[in-house]
Amino acid sequence: MARELAFYEQAERSIVKKYRRELWTPFITAVQRYALVEKGDRIAVCVSGGKDSMLLAKLMQELARHGHTPFEAVYLCMDPGYSAANRARIEENADKLRVPLTIFESDVFAVANAQARSACYLCAKMRRGHLYAKARELGCNKIALGHHFNDVIETTVMGMLWSGQLQAMPPKLHSQNFPGMELIRPLYRVHEDDVIAWARHHDLAFLQCACRFTEASAHNERLSKRKEVKALLRSLRAQNPNVEKSVFNAIHTVNIDTFPGWKSGGEVHTFLENYENFE
Image (cartoon, rainbow, N blue to C red; front, side, top):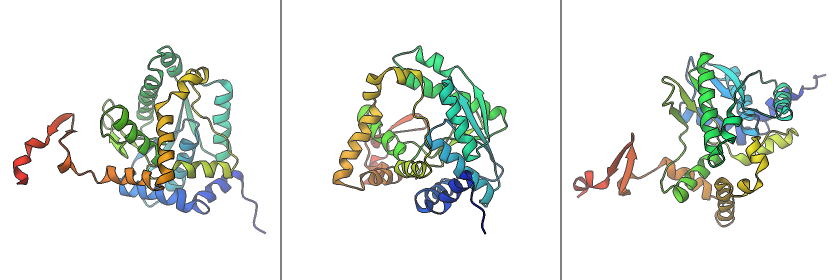
């Protein structure tokens, strides 16, 4: 008689069986298409306690065990000032899923929350800096974040509508402040709804944004531009189910020849530079 699988084994099996098409296949496609994982890498998989980063940790575990490219993974969690209950939730989920977390503390929430007008921006910037520094201390050359397909689409639309720029979220990039380090996004082609479905299937409850600033200000949460974009895309999807796919395809096939201006390597360019070459 076959033994009953432990909870973490059920979660792992569901990734490559029940949710293979929704999770494993797009994950592997991103890893391969964008060359995210290379031989000899030591990658800090950053776990915030949310659904996306915890699923990323499980996917990276499976890749490290069964993939064809040898690499090492460290599962890194920064406690930026979580409440005791939220810290316990992260540790409990990691234990249930057998994710061996390396946890370190920082004062990110205390510093960011003191800046009411730019708390979220400062928090994100400080988090990334601390993660890079700790990852480098642990001998890693890359950090992996849990940004997924919907984050890519929403960021692109937000930049266009509110910042006046066509700027996407790349699947990987070099760190400007930590030479030799890279950031990768292995969930780049994984849809948020499929992450939610996996979590619900296993009755897992993860952290949302757990900062005290958000918890104390429902007003700011309602005004979140990302939530507005989510609602906009949801309404557009009712008319065109492929609207997000179209945006995703668009950022992969940008036709520079049709743009009056663009920026590359920090330098601004104009179509007039090469205009005479297109007679």
